[in-house]
Length: 182
Image: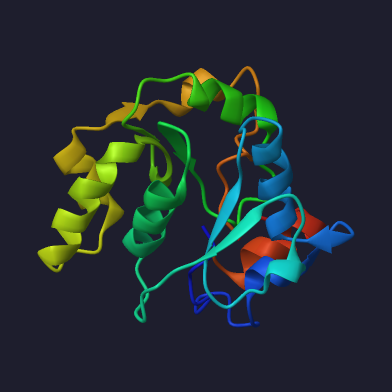
C-alpha cells in the first residue's frame, strides 16, 4: 500500500526515499515478489516508473484512508487470497511473508493491522465499513472476525522483529542507519 500522505515523515514521500541503493518501497516489493504470483502497488502520488516488479494501481478516491488502498487491492487482485502490507517496511523478509501467506484469511499481525491476509471477497465488507464513514483498519478486522497472528510465530525467521517495522517518522528511517532507536 502506497497511498499515505507521509505527513508524520515530514521529509516528502517516504516511499521514494533512498534506502540501501534503491527506493524505500522496493524492499517490500522485492519481498512480495518472492511470495506472490502478482504484486500490486496501490496508492497515489507515485508514478509507475518509480519502482520495479509490480503493477501500479491508482486509487480512485480523493481522500486518504488505508481502507481505500485495501478496497482497491481486493478489487484489482486476481487471486483469492490477498496479502496486504504497507510500502514503508523495507526490512520485511520473504520467508516471513511466506509464513503469513500460509495462514487462513482473514488474519492480521499482532500490533499492526496493515500487515494482513484477506480474501478477495472481503471487499464487500470494506465497502460497507466505508459507507458507514469508518476508516480504521482495526474496525474492518473486527467485522471480518480476523485472527490475530502472534509475532512470536515469526521469531525463528526474524528474531529481531524488523520485518513488521513501519517507518512512520523520519527518525525511524534515520535510526536504521545510526542504530539508535527512537
